[in-house]
Structure formats: C-alpha cells, structure tokens
Image (cartoon, rainbow, N blue to C red; front, side, top):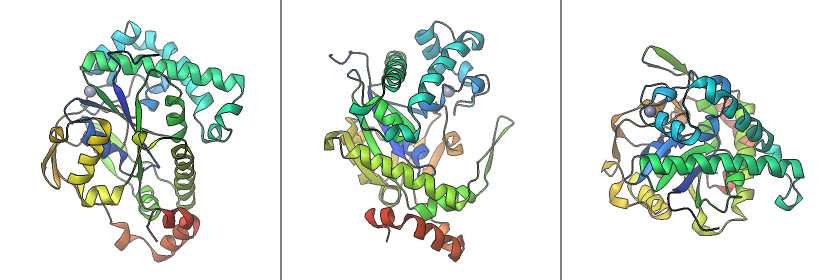
Length: 315
Ligand SMILES: [Zn+2]
C-alpha cells in the first residue's frame, strides 16, 4: 500500500527508562517540520484522560494543539465521549505490548495476539495521520520507548517508521531511579517515581535485550543507535546525524550554539518532568552518579548488567 500523502514519518525513540528520551524528543520535536508528542503509548490510559497534562501547561483535553487533533480523529474531545474509545485502544495496547509479547517470533504469533496488534496499529495510524494533518508536520517524534511498541508499529505498511535506539549507562539510570525530584506546574506537583537498583537494572536489561533483538531484523536506514553520553557531550554532530537519518533539515534544529538549545513551549503528553522545560538550556551529560553513587551500589548494578555494558562500550 502506498504511504498516504498526509501521513507523517514516525521517528520513534526506543530506550530503557531514564535514558534521556524526553529531552531528545523535545529537541527533535522542535526541529523545523517535526512535531514532538512525548509518549503516545501512554495517551490511552482511559482513567488518566481527564487529568493528563500537556507540556504546554494545559490539560491535554484543553491544549490548543491536542484538542483539535482529538476532535479531528474521533469527532469530539469530550472525556465522556473519548473514554470508551480510549479504553478499547488501551485493551488492545495492553494485550500486545508487554515484554513477553516480544518473545515469540513474528511468524509464531497467536491469532488473538495478531488481532490485537492489528487493532492497535490501526489506531496509531489514525492518530499519526491526524497529527500530520492538524500540525502540518512531516515527522512525528514519539518517545514511547518500548521495543514491543516499536515491533507493533513496524507491522504497518502505511507508516514510515525510523527508530533511534538510545542507550545510557545502567549505573546512571539506576542512580536516576533512586533520586526523588519534584516539579510544580500550574500548582500541580509532579514527583518522579523511584525504583530499587535490582528492578531498574532488570528493566534496563530487558529493554535493551528486546531492542537489540528488534535491531537485528531492521535495515540500517531504519535503525540508529546513539549513546546518551555521546549525545550530551557532542550534541551538535549527533543531532545533525539524527536529523539526516530522520529526513529533517539539519539547520532546523533548535541549537543556538554547539552545546546549547533554545526550547519553546512544546506539546509532549507524557514523559519525564523536563518536558516542561523552556528557554535556553545547556546540553551536557548528567553524570552525578559518578560522584554520588555508593560504591557497593555501583558494583551491584555493574555485576547485574555487565554483558550489555561491555557491548555498549561502558566497561
Ligand atoms: Zn499542549
């Protein structure tokens, strides 16, 4: 099937949590011709519908960008109208995007799993197409992160999907999971969730293993592997490389110097608290863990994750 003329390309960021996907989504989403939406995968949580806040500071249902998208895609942005539609999409999502759904080879999927994947990808195609029409973008930047989500998107013959596989040192992500941070936006307090070392190492291992499995089946023009540390140490050349990969103009990146960017108000519907950040930002790696992480914690995470740490050049 030919790609529909209003269908934007999808630039999907796949990564373990706390790897820098939100800031990367925001930077790329503010490039000329792109629209950064945060984590689309989380939009369908029907119970969160009324309270979900966009990074512009409005509720998603009142956001000047998302409300027209939802009205154009579904006919209304009223919560009572959307809730059953989202609940149905959520049902398909939850039935096909757990890590265990990555285990069978694609040609061994059960009929039920295939049906859920078809229904979910069809819902995603609809909203991507609507985003393209409403915002006029040619590339949607989606930081949904999950390899299983990527696998579903790659089923589509209507979508041009390109994947950035973003890797970060497991010791840094484990340290980040233990930090408690709060941000207040319009009187609402957002506090980061916390994970133990073993749980975060497990999430890191499973996500990166599944992403690696996915990568083996993809041609190089659809898959780009980037390390967070390289991105933040040399943002200018790495972002230019990503822009080339995504078909975005290199001179449209929001960089104002080789290591500084200027962020305007964005419309990311989910992700880390730094999605609310605007203005001039310095791009440099957050490496507090190197000084502040206890040696025994560092050794434990290294021991749990060393095969992949070595593969990615961290050991
Ligand atoms: Zn918004």
